[in-house]
Length: 435
Image (tube, rainbow, N blue to C red; front, side, top):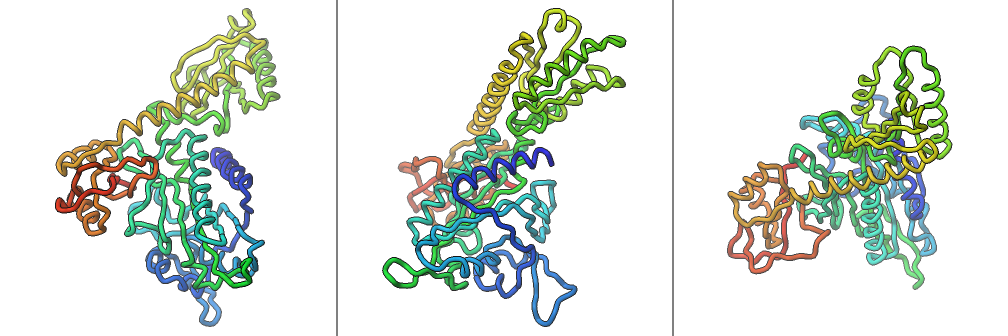
């Protein structure tokens, strides 16, 4: 929960700074609202939980799978004319999906307990798509700060959000070679505003339907952070978001209280400088046991003090990412720790991105594509853009389609569609095995 709260604070800060207002909507949605948008209900109806007790009259309630249909009736009340636009809200709540596949903690769950969903309304498509680009930028900043590498793709028509005009998705590659969707941004057009009758009075004196967007991120961001950076010794957490940034371990012999006092003085200086530090002064555990314990927890920096350090007026610092040791003078320990945290974060980000990029391949040979997928890669293949050909590609390669790249403008040149050789390829289609 401490990790989660730190990540939530980042999400809140970036949304607050960009003009979003935080709201809190009920978990129950009347079926009357949910059923209004036909594509939306077709996409989610098999995934919803129904309330079966305590119902009054004919009213039926569902547990929200997402909140477009709950928020739009309020947009109708809040938005009157063009001066109310753009209108941006977000909430961090639980949403529920009647998941029938095998669940995985924080990855595929029936209660998504840290779901940030933003919902925005705009005067026209141009401003709504500007918001889509801003949302993509917000998500980039979130993942960059958490040192999580990502691919940005425009989902295929058959895999977009139910009720969206189009969907942009962020995916990352997990260590087992499967991709995981970690964030989505949807341009909804007038699809929801028309069925919920959300209009505004324009400058021209006429009524117009608003254009809406929505975008979501969940605890999958924490799951990916843990999985991508962890190693055989346990977790490794980005220093800015680790609950404990420095663990201080006194290496005492007998009843030597001088070392403990020294450690507490140094830790106090770090705490006053804003560093989250913990002193492990347990007497029933050896220093070696403590090292392994805090490495497992992913604490970025270990600060050790033994008799030699007290004598020389120094401390010993160990990095969790590389296990390199440094000796720092007592008088500059704050600066040394702050610099080390910057180095660790930069190294974590660099290592993660290099690993992802090394696992994105291109091929126009079906057998090679299948081999690369089996080796845990994302594979980009030539695609004409035709839905039938795209689904045939998925069938032939036994893979999932992530969509077309939005983080690259490069097009396939002089290549044919992987499945429909009579068609010229117009884009790269990303394939993977995914959660």
